[in-house]
Length: 124
Image 1 (tube, rainbow, N blue to C red):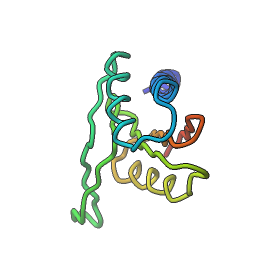
Image 2 (image 1 turned 45 degrees about the vertical axis):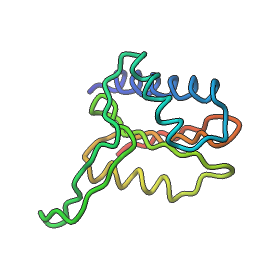
Image 3 (image 1 turned 90 degrees about the horizontal axis):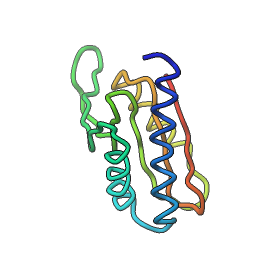
Image 4 (image 1 turned 120 degrees about the horizontal axis):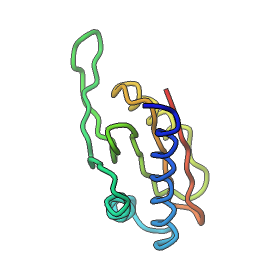
């Protein structure tokens, strides 16, 4: 995927997140935002999979699995949070681990818990 297409895709996803936050505001559980975001992504014409499961491989052995909140267009992992205050580095580490294990190159960490929607774009 060329860089402009990837940037366009993440920009569309981020726009959907802002629409959700603008309408709902802070204070809901993560699941509420996830459900609203699925509606926005669908309206934007994006293909996504919720709770996509990936295997974690160590020395060619499956040692576990993880589920990301959303995988959009098979290209971007979206992890959603609804926490007030400062976002811990733990969330970024979690997303980076997901990117590494899945071989997906781009991830978005979205926090709906504060007065403005917070977005962190991470790449491998």
